Length: 363
Image (tube, rainbow, N blue to C red; front, side, top):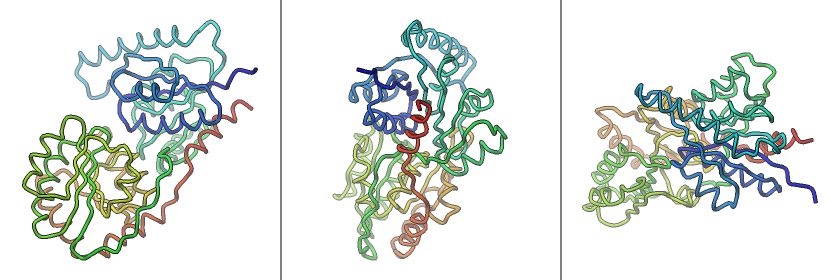
């Protein structure tokens, strides 16, 4: 019996890198591939590998950019240690020539220690991250899978014509379109999500604004607050009565988008892609300290298509959010307009496109 085709998948740290990798891994598993996942102990990747029943190589990589001198030195040391661990655990004496699929972020640096098979890169954001740019400029990757058309244009402008650059969209699985409810003039289902790890800013400010308007309008709230934040958020919402659901992490985001009339969220690449797939109307609040301001660029992708509102973290955020919400509640047509605009954006079967491009290397 022939041994199964094998692929290295490299992703770790935050859900923005790990969850698209998980969905692509599931596609490869369905097609009979053997997966060897490389990641860290700090993200959800180790548990994901356990659930999927696939091999996991743990490396001690750390982020480098924006850190203190000591942290940078620590990260550099961890980089070389990680290379040594990967070399030993990936069976250097008998391993065959396997492709490696990396999903950006500092964990992708492990590809610098891989000299046999081709390296493919999936970049989620409209503006590529530092490691993705580095991999590209050092000719380490042979194909790039882009989450947005703007991502593809960014790489193409660097004139690396021998690298195949494809707009695949982001791997987000199958997400149903939002239900078209007959909205009452003063009723709204509001979903608040701060990314896979939650958002202190959204927890603190959005919750208080929602409490203020809840006395005058019929709204229901679902709030994803992140790990260890449920107790504090329940205290904030305590005076707001019923119709409020608070959870650390929403496991079935599809159902949440189906329920929501309006989403208030950060603008990570996967969130933006999920909003597009679910045809959701959203108020996006870009993370102020995101590297290269990539969350603002992600949000601008929808804003420029008249498909979302943007509110930035300013001193007037609470006042601006309350004003916008009241305006939306008084004019439900604005929600329908945003949903109509976002429905014009193309949705791609990202997992299948990526699988076919990687599998083509075996032919």
